[in-house]
Length: 188
Image 1: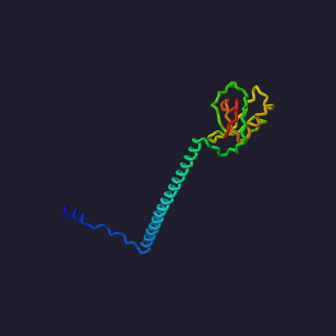
Image 2: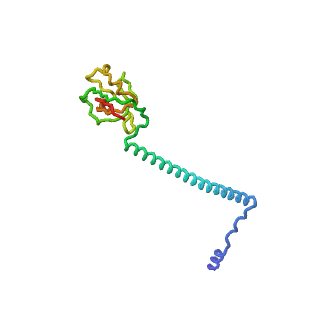
Image 3: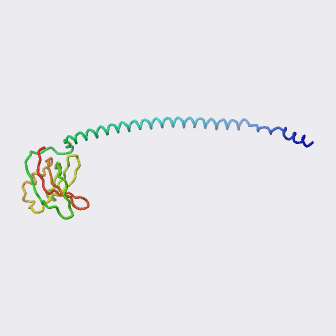
């Protein structure tokens, strides 16, 4: 008898699946259809985004290529020594020179000889804006120690916008302020 009782429990059928009404079925079908539409929109958005990213990458690559060509052109011009972008036209050449102070001041160091172009000068404040041969502009102080700057007739004729000059320099302080110790004009 004990075995028969076990058999009865093992042969019992599972409870029947719940029957879904038409309203529930329709709402589930509607929900599945909405998810399908959202999924398709998501896939379309991803494809569109992939296309936009590809276009942006292409534009960036073209810009990098164009920049590298511009950089090559600039390097070629600089290596040829003809970089004068932003420099005023050359004034008539005069062979002139000026020597301010040849002694390097305290807390200063002598710099390399600098060749550049005068962009503008403020002779009242003893400063000149010079653009070097690589296009870098810097304001330099004109050294006046040992000379009466106001009586020097050649100084205003040297610091004419567009004049090419070679200068002996010293740099002072932690900011590296440049002082022109001597200058002479060069032919452009």
